[in-house]
Length: 68
Image (cartoon, rainbow, N blue to C red; front, side, top):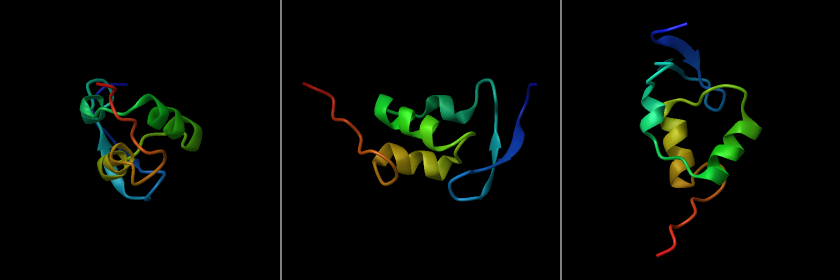
């Protein structure tokens, strides 16, 4: 299956477009612990707003700071 499809975010229940291969979400930097939480908590994709909330630590585990 190729091309954008309509999905409903499992977290907030809002509709959004998934680009599948080359989707917008591939450009979002999600930490390993955050990705593990998403995979454990949901069966499908999150919308852009909810994914950004995860990245910011507003949803799920807090982001891990890069060691300097």
